[in-house]
Amino acid sequence: MKFIKTLIANDVGASSTRLAVVIGLSASTVLVVTRIGVAVAGQ
Image (cartoon, rainbow, N blue to C red; front, side, top):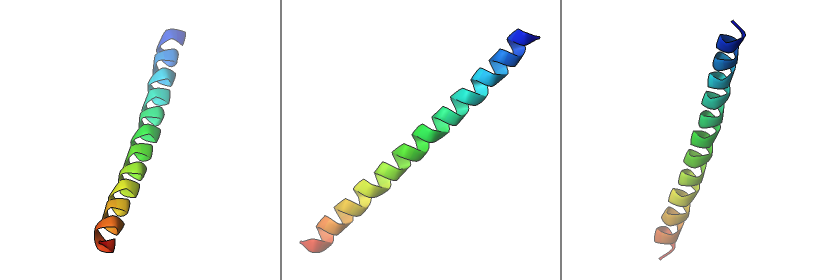
């Protein structure tokens, strides 16, 4: 029973970590896109 609880806890931790990584990636993608947009608009 303890093994299953550990697996579930690990799965939840992994998914929240993955979520944090995805949020970080999308945030930096938005930053890059806006920077490119500003650079194009400035030319």
